[in-house]
Image 1 (spheres, rainbow, N blue to C red):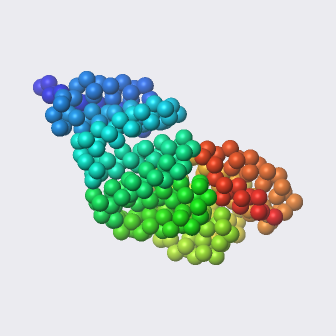
Image 2 (tube, rainbow, N blue to C red):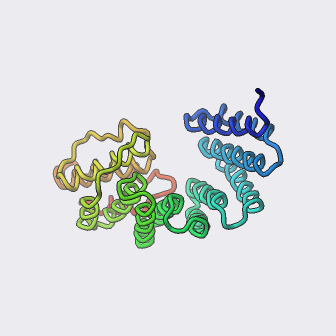
Image 3 (tube, helix red, strand yellow):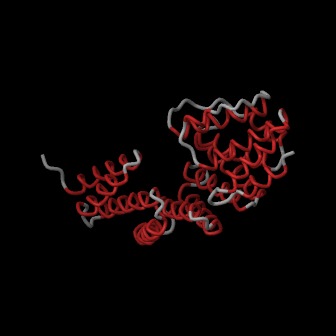
Length: 296
């Protein structure tokens, strides 16, 4: 039996998403383009076209073509407002995506504005206890850190933790990643005792095998090794994972910090390497650079 056009379009959306998750950009884009040809102009079809357009924006984003991604995400935001109004989970997602694009392009003030708009939209639609709210709060907290606004970063990340805890508990990867980012902000302000207290209060991370889950587990392991168990070997579980540059840069800071306590004669070399890595981040991380410069 031949599927009707929207069912075929939905299958292509799933195919495009799967290809994108595998990093196969051209097949993902071709599948998204087939959606645009197959889907009709019913409400279901229009939503499928929006989903395909979002996937096309994600492909452009992954390729680093931020100008194309900006055009697509702005179009999606406009169309989503027209179809679903201001108070909608889809509108919140469009704003969240625009914020992520601005962040990667280095426009942190624009990113913060769009994240705040996404949070307001999500909270009006879902209420405070929702995964989307927690994720946007977590991203806004990271944006404030990159702006060098430590107090705003701390407040926002605590809000992300509260939303994530209410959504599915303190054992979730989402809660623990928000807690991890807060602990990093505390470390960068030399607030070791507060960070260590938070680290020791964390329950065991729930079972999981996604890349994000393994990365969170690894980064928490590193903090426990260096701050709670007084160990700091050169080996790191991050070497087995594909992680963002800022994660590796912070890990180099941790190693430099441990070196300053155990092998001060090696500090200058370690610090220079870590500063070089941190200074190359886009967008920049002034709190990390300042913490490295204070090491002695």
